[in-house]
Each structure stands twice: as C-alpha cells, then as structure tokens.
Length: 73
View (cartoon, rainbow, N blue to C red):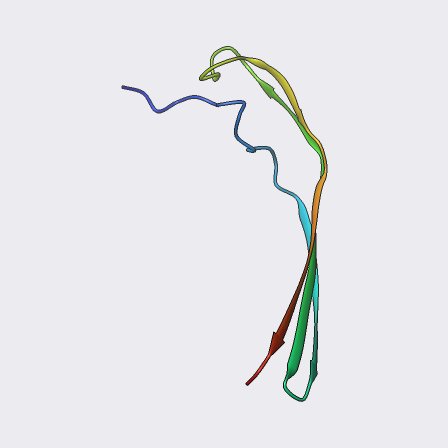
C-alpha cells in the first residue's frame, strides 16, 4: 500500500510565519503575550499526487493573539 497522496483537508502549504512575543514582570505578577501570523498561500495538487481531490487550493492568512497573566502565591 502506498503512502503517497495529498489530502485537501490538511493545512500543508508553505508555512511562512511571523511570530513575536513580550513579557512584563512586576513583583509576583507576570504577563506574557504573543502574536502569530501565517501568510496566505496557494498550492496546486496534480491528479498524480492527490489522495482525494486534485485541484488548486488557497489558504487564507491566519493570526493569533494570546495573553497570559500569572500571579505567584
């Protein structure tokens, strides 16, 4: 059985990302934050490589902002 194939349900485009983060500390308090951005990409899946459906697939840009607040007791 061959393991060759591409499934259009997975996010397997070229994974270019921009990540940054900051930390602030004061006494017993700690605040961590991060911002992540994944750039959009288009990929073409040929009929020879397709596991399910050949075609052109476009991923939209994605981003995430997170903030974590911690207090030491």
